[in-house]
Length: 343
Image 1 (cartoon, rainbow, N blue to C red):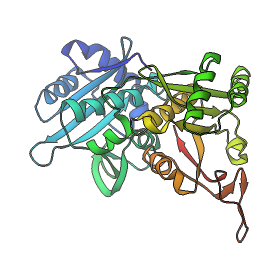
Image 2 (tube, one colour):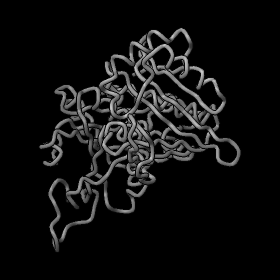
Image 3 (tube, helix red, strand yellow):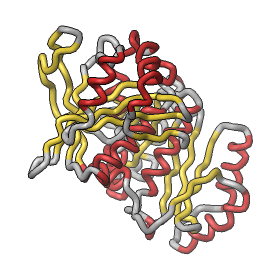
Image 4 (cartoon, rainbow, N blue to C red):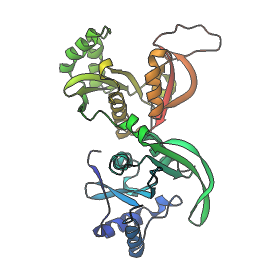
């Protein structure tokens, strides 16, 4: 995914652009109509030379993988624009558009100084809805017969993101450098020591067992460092003990920990994102987690909501067992509601 880059189109892109759009015609229908002829490319190029319009091509190596259009840019007190996008068929479902969208959002909010972006998407276009939702957009409403597409007035959902949303989800402290790697044996002593200093019981045997599971490919462990110093970790269980996740082939994010003095720097978000990316690369369509019900988990509950996780609809659980009506259970870290999201 690191090979994705984004730039504005040039006239020299015409042949590659039209070839990519021809190959994608059946995929794009009935959602959008992309330029298909030299004349249409010329009109597209001229339109996005205007100050109120901007277009970006996303590339994987030398190949165009997608297009992002920021249109109807309004300045003054509004600072708003509309976002359109479409993928090249050869690269659909590979995560490239999600990477490209993150870059485009950074440009929109940091370089173009916009306050809000709105994406209008037909309700049946579930992949596009999943893309924006997973990148911080929230659903604001429904507009019947909003846009004419392929000669028909079509209903659309309104999804939007503001700069405040973007900063909360994507932006880390500019003075920090976060690196995330797989757990290795040399990390364990430092991790145990760090948690001992704050009074958390995280024994060496826990991480020894994690390493063993990693070697058998049943769990993956990611370790985060802030300017070289250990600051947190997360694990992914590829076969969850929770039967609903296991039955539906949903890996489970578990044991997310960020040291208290490193919180509110975007580290938890980065750890969740790399779990999602790793799951996508393994071919999974969803990922899940359980979140505690006590006040200690308030920040985690808000974070997971911002990142697009929703309750799976199976109610309250103690560990992995459903809590039935009128049942008495112990309120502790094992009392959870399971959440999931499409990735």
